Image (cartoon, rainbow, N blue to C red):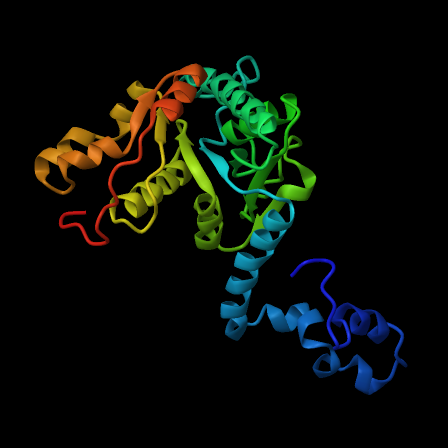
Length: 281
């Protein structure tokens, strides 16, 4: 709903404010008296899960639309991959070897943000998970290029605060992983996947599955670091076993550098739309 919309009905926010000034009585203190939409205890009830799912879908969608964000370039990647030189003595050697991808994510985000700004800043806005590591690198590169970027954070048992480079007005927090992943892909015009762990793998395979099954339009899917990805996933074995089609290996490509990724996006051509059901997916 746009800010200039006018309704004949009283605004809900007016009633929230008015309810703060009502007489303090046993009746007005009762939980049942609180306005339903302003009652956090009520909204957190088990029976209200469908409403909470809808709210998590609607809030970022409305804010991004109001902000004029038309499309995004999504960066997935590990929270543990720190900038070169930032890793302490206790960091695993493998993570130190991957630190260069922080810089590649940062440079790639800067290059794509410069392009976005040249076109008005509404297309190709960088979107990350909003946390540390590769996510921070993406938001940082966008900020250094003078542009906006999106952070889709999530509440975790060990609190993950948004990194300082996310555009504050485009920084979101989620309870539901499923809705968060929807928002990653709803506006995506390219998906770039850097080395990472379970969360990165989950995000990557969800995107590939949606494209493979025709539930999402095909977009460039770029995997940074061939050696890493071929080490953790035996792609050819999947095709040889018949659990995926050989043509499914064309849904993504490997890149090593920011410049190579930009060139791959420029050279990308959309394949024919796939059928919704593909045997062996």
